[in-house]
Length: 267
Image 1 (cartoon, rainbow, N blue to C red):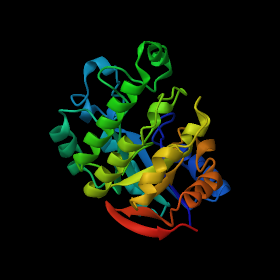
Image 2: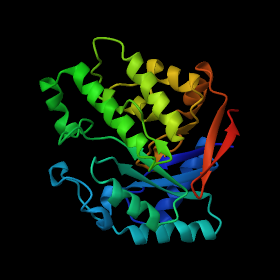
Image 3: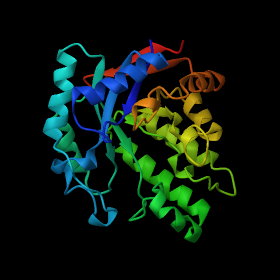
Image 4: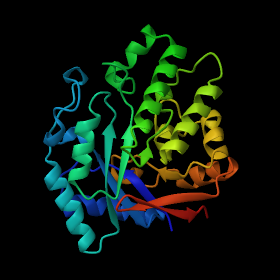
């Protein structure tokens, strides 16, 4: 059995016809179960969570999204209810209250901003030319650890998404990666092997080899995800991701139900 829990419906309506396109793509890719994980910032219920300088737009209602997925679950569709939440320091209580309102199967935590800079946004990519690359990586990893330490989330998304545009630090960050692994272990969280990086300028899975090694050595539970925003990307490059996981010593993955983690063999 294979599953893909990082899938976004946001380019279409919350309608069964649109969702069925993802399910059809999943079947073709050998994926048995899809978890939808819309960005929380799209929901009107979270408008106050994020700094206005981030420029995020709340265009949907969380109640509609949750009701839509829960109805499909009851009807027997092989889907899970998830959400991806950007970590915003200082908004922990608001995020916790939002999470507690709905019957999520899992909650994904992510870091996409350093202060007011959306470092992975194409329209802000030019700002990389103004950065100290090493310091930027360290600030991102500090935010990653801070997000994990809140224990608000079940999975930390694309652990080194900071590399998205191909900028690399001039020296090894192994100590920082080891610290991230320790934090995830202490917090009881899982991490994501995310194939979206292969579709980005960096052309590399998240996390890269130097980061996945300490995660595997610490036996942090992993989940393989596509981060699909369109049907044709569901399960994208999963054979490569499974092989990548095996090569780095991972032997099991995890699934989720009602925020309970279930170990599964890496077949």
